[in-house]
Every structure is written in structure tokens, then in C-alpha cells.
Image (cartoon, rainbow, N blue to C red):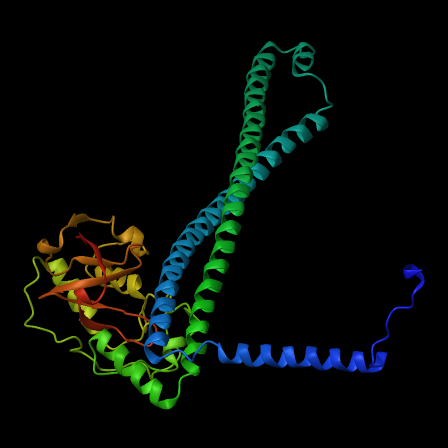
Length: 377
């Protein structure tokens, strides 16, 4: 009997039940919304923004040095490919000349009736004429054999050159792809830094620039536009604007200059001093702008010494010296990844291209984590 009883009806209708459920869900969603709002991440402080921007600049500089290395390898691969292509063109020209000579011989034989030289000699009744023609035929045979050998030699050489050219072209395309990847990384890091700085209020931006100036050892703050340039090198190292070039020739509290140990070191330092105030542009090697390794490379080139392009190759371009042994003209390197380099000028100071927005300047070497030093020249 119990199994056939009708279930007890709710005093509320079905429509009322649905309405109550809807209200309950809406209340829960509203509560969740307010709870989430209450726990939203707070606005980052100026110090936090500065720390993040500094980290992005450091990461961008690491990518810049990788870009520089990829560009150097791409340039080498392109030069090798062009050299092989030119050699193949010269070989092809020689091949065509040898083929023409061989063709001329074949045509002469055809015009002579196509008879074997031995048969022609047998038909000659004059003994003197026989001996003369025999000598000529022997020489002709030697020339024909030499022509055939020349053709075969040039064909083999061209096949080898084509194989080497294909390998160099593959390497070149790989380096160009790496170049594009590293460029995208640099541009992305600098764009992220730019976006972070754009969120600061005028007051926060002023505090940021004061903190950046204190870190760089300069009385100038970072330039809002130049600090986030993402266009990169223009081929000549031009920054694309003169607003970042400052005549800041004594940043970092320069002490009395220390005499360079030799003429080459003195020439490198003299060149670097002449670049003070020029802007940092990633991938640039002068004369209007530099990145860190581009500046040191250009300075030592002015002294007659050829340095490789990147920080992680420049550190192996000379004899390692300890910090206590530093002398003017030494290259000083920073960060665990050897991603920054400056030119030591004595008194604990260096000339370097610091980062986007900070022009070439003099600064203390202890403003960044010291990683090592190298003496070149």
C-alpha cells in the first residue's frame, strides 16, 4: 500500500521552486564575484615595476648577444656561399672554354673526312710527308686527350662546388632563422618593458627614473621613448633620434684618470671616451649608436685589435685577469651568463653602453654582478 501512495506535494508550485533556485545561483555568483574582486592582485609598486623592467632589459641583452652571434655566423655563411658561387662561375667559364676547344677538334676531324689518322698516314706515298703528318697527328691526339681531361676535371670541380654551396646555403638559412628568433625575443622583451612603464602615473614614472638614474650612476633618468626602442639596428648603428644623445661625459663620479699600460689600451680608451653620450641601440656597432659588445669591439678596433662580436666570445679573446689585477683597457664582464661588457678605465670605473635609454657613459664596475675580465692587445 505504501508503494502506491502519492508523493507529498511541495506547498510551493514548480515555478516558485525554479525562481528560488535561480535567485540562489545568482547570489552565489555575486558573492563569488565580490570575493574575487576582494582578492585581486594589488597594483604593482614602482619598485616592483623597476625590478621587472630591469629583469626584462637584462633578458633582452642576453637575447641581443645571441642575436649578435647569430648575425656573425650568418654573415660568415653568406660570405662563404658567395665565394663558392663565384668560384663555380669561374670554373664554369673554364669548362665552356675546354668544351669549345674539344668541339673545334671534333669539327676539324669531321671536315678531314673522319678517317682515322693511321689510315690517312698509310695512304700517303711521300715518306717525308708521312713523317710530318705522323708528328702532327700525335700532337693533335695529345691536345685532344688534354682537352678531354680538362673537361672532366672542371666537371668534377663544379660538382664539388655545388655540393659545398648547397651545404653553405643550408647553414645560411639556419642562421637567418636563428637571427629572426633572437630578434623577436629582443623586440618582445623591450615591448613588455615599454608596456609596464606606460602603466605608471607621472609621479610613479618620476620615481622610477630617479631610481634608474641612481642605479646607472647618472644625474639623468631613462628616456621614456629610447628605453623601449624595439626597431633594433639599422645597419649603421644610428639610433633614429637624437633625443637620447646626451653630453654626459662624467657619469658615475669619474676619478682621476689612470695611465694606460700601453699605446693600444690608451687608443681603445680614447675612442670609447669619444663615444660618451651616444645612445644604446641593440645590435648596433657604431658610429652613431652601440650595444655593449659593439662598443668594446669598436674601441679595440680603433686600437688595431680585432675582437669577436659577442660578450661570450670576447671574454675568450685574451688573457683572463682577476679583479685585483685590472688595468685600463681590460674588458670587464658581468652577470652569470656573460651578457654585458664594459671597457675598464681605472679607478674602479668603466665606459659601457648600459641598456636601452641609457647612453654610453662612465660607471663603477660594482654596479652589476662582476663575472670576469680579459686583457687583450
